[in-house]
Length: 291
Image 1: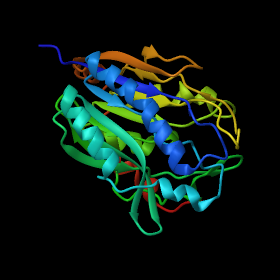
Image 2: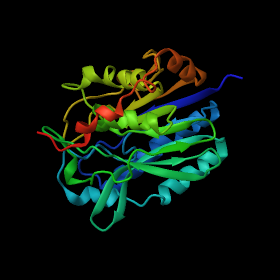
Image 3: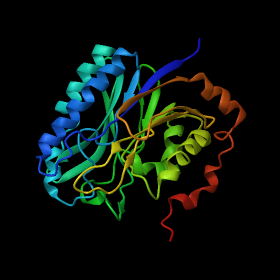
Image 4: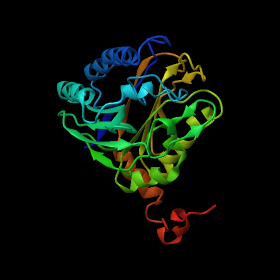
C-alpha cells in the first residue's frame, strides 16, 4: 500500500506593517491572519502543516532593539497549546516556528512539532545563526541551537526541521537523513537579492543527496520600518529526485499543498546508494577546527 502524505506550507505577509504598533499588537495580528489559513489546511485534508519562520511576528532581525524579546515565549507554551487543540481537531500534524524564551536573556529561533492527536513531540532550535549585513543580525536575538538535529515520528511520516539559514549547511541536512527523516521542513524568511538564486538550488540538492522530500516555506511582502527587501514567497515541495511538486507564488499569501509518495524514497535510494557508499572514516577533517 502506497504511503502517500498530503502536506501544506503557509506563506504570509505582515498585516500590521506599522512601525508605531506595539510588538504584542503585531504578534497578535500575525497570529490571527494565519489562523484562517491553518483551518483551511485542516479542512482540505492536509496531514502535515508547516508555518513560516517566526510565523507570529515580523522578521525583526534587521533591528537591534531588545523590545522584540517581548514576543518570545516558552515551548511548550500558550501558542503551542492552541495549535495542539487545532492539530487534534483536524488530525493534522503541525510545525510551529516561534521565538522561544528558555529563561531570562536566553532565546532561540525554534520550531515546535505537534502530532496529529495534539501531542507535543519536541522542538528544533536553529543551529546556524547568521550575522549578515544588511538586515540579518540574528546573533543579537538568538543563541545557536543545542538540541542537534532531531527527527520526529508523526502519525504520517518521520520528519526533520531545518530553519532558514541552516539550509546553506549540508552537514545538518545529511544528519537529518541519517536520523531517518523522510520529509525535511525548512521554514524561512528570506528576501530577494544575493541568495534568491540559491532558494531552488540548495534544497533540491539536499533532497537528492539525502534521498528525502523537502518542504520549504518563505514569507511574502516587505516589512517596515526596515524594508530590507522583498520576501519572495515561492514556498515549495521537492521530491528525492529534485523535482518540484508544488511551488507558491512570489507575491500572495497562500496555502501551498502537495501530495508526497513516501515509497519514492526507497525507490530512489535503491538506485542512488549514497548511504551505502558514504565514507565517514575519511571525514575526520569535517569536525576539526580548520582555517
